[in-house]
Length: 308
Length: 277
Image (cartoon, rainbow over all chains, first blue to last red; front, top):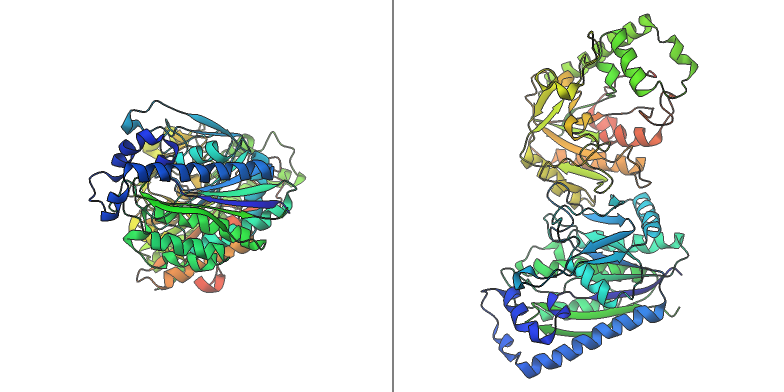
């Protein structure tokens, strides 16, 4: 069984900054947007507690990756005009190369450059792109040297770099970009079909492969609703994944809503992982969920673990 | 309004030469380093003259049909062939919906004169501009994504490919003066990955489905639309099988079938002669 692990982790740059930086990061993410009254509950002691839960969740994901002894980790992520520019905005995209890099530093906070290079599994990517296209997807690709066009100086998105650096355990990755932010974005149903196709394509490899969604959950960092989190939606999404019903979530974007753009649009990535794992009969286990207004996203962490 | 006319043609560069010399020069440039099939010897001056006459007739038929139907826009399905894009950014199917005009070239007669001309170095003679119907292109993109096709979107021309001076994909521009000499109908460019070095190209069935989805979207629109497949048919320019007339399912599937069911657009209008040059 080549697909042996699924992981979901929400993304906020706050997750990867020390507790002492949280106030500055929060101000950057939420800007001048009036905050919900509930945000006032995030007192220093409460934030200390949340920081502890966050570290526990990230440590747990890292431990799971390490213990599963993966050969490769597929990472579903959304681009935010870093890899791609307006000349070519793919709906689905696979990087078929040996290395990808990105600089997740927040230059708005005068952070020094922290460029990281990640090793990729080009051979697995080659298998996936061929098999998934053969099964009816118009997957775009990048071959050879990584050449970001959206932000040539900063490379691939921070949600990829920071997540993989923190929990990836040095396992080679296959970066897959899903268009969540440029309208018209891919439908939830199509992402679900894509996730299932990925799982089927993995039958053509003997490698032990995991799949990680890095993005979401609800929220709108830097945006119109920055700091507002729809934990009702997030909990509904997580319950659906825990009961192998990614199909329900796939219909979310059949309606247009202000609350479904921003990072909430990246719930699509979780649908992709959920669908892939449901294809092999595995449902999610929710490791933790807590809405941190300082992070500007609903902070959820989940695993889909096979017995093998 | 549905599609009013569907067309397809090859676009190899010799095709647009009027002289034996012109054809010979392009053949030498593209094919002479590859072992050739014996039939090449049959392509003497008389044969080429016949090809030229047939090309005129065939494109004349396409031009006449286009003029009769007078569409509001022309959907052009073309291979990129590493011209706008290179392996570092390789769409499988892409719609260009930008507002910037496509500035490119034809190559009519570029090798017929005393010297072979490099067409992109003579924009005054070979240059052309195609207006893009951005709004319609966006409509097609949204429609195809809604139909479950993972079509990449381009809103900006930013050439990355092998020969930037030569402009946009030749498949988009080369034949346009043959179809509409005034270049007065806006286009909706749909690019496919075809001959690029990738194992992940669309199969014929998916191409056919794409063509049918395009036809379905056309039916919902008030505009009169034409569709044209540019490329193929059965050889590999500057590739190992060059000149061998090999039936290449990829070229056929991607560059021809995507125009959709012939029944959707009426009697197919192909340029029905082959060559090895």
